[in-house]
Image (cartoon, rainbow, N blue to C red; front, side, top):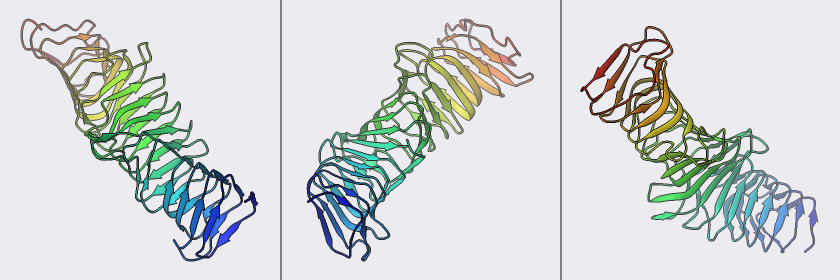
Length: 365
């Protein structure tokens, strides 16, 4: 029952570690793949790998466990918290059964996914040591909003290869991205709230739902919809001061149904090679840069707007632009449509280079 210095090996047998027993070395299965069993009766730390060349059939932990090296097992069942500092390769689903914490500190593959199963736990993907790629769906129980995905690590990137949540009725409670951390989501994300705390988020799939709210909580925060979006998410700066947070919209058609910068204004909104972009609600930002085929502002817009490509801008009837509309490149075909009603653009139009055409639908515009 004392600590073990060195490696432990088994050939299709069962290894049981008593509470508080730590292993300074590896725990290896030298028998058939998925044949051995590892049981932790309490809190333990294993500094080396678990499994080695061949995965364990099962690893069971009654309390908190920390793994310094790569863990390879078919199943992992736990009743405390788990820290996979060296990463994990787990075949079956990992399910929470309480308010638990799981940390993946290196590239990991959980083929069956991780399921909060309605519990208020936390999964942390940490790239402090190196870039971290996580494969496996992260989900929760049907008809529930539960579980927090925390992405941290500083300058290194965290890439989430599979879907997070399943739908707007089966979603996480929050996704958080820490200061200076770059979070890349390859598939869709479903969460009640996304908090970007000075880090950056890149969404590679055209989003059909993201969150009720995306909150920029610190300077340097950004979110990039690489292939557009069709969402009703409120995108907000919650720092208490204006000019924080950058929204970048990439290729494809996009519709943003929620207000942008409602509490405090964003620093910038950048349209980069976009097709048709529609802002359905009010928009507040220090600047909006437009490289898009067309842009519709259906709510009041507070921003200085600069156009760098041929485009058509449409302002909805009775709505205003509090700021200027400028063209940064000479001889661009830029059309500004004012749809009617009493509308005002407070700043200069075409102060650097001319807007080609202004269409005013009524004398009120």
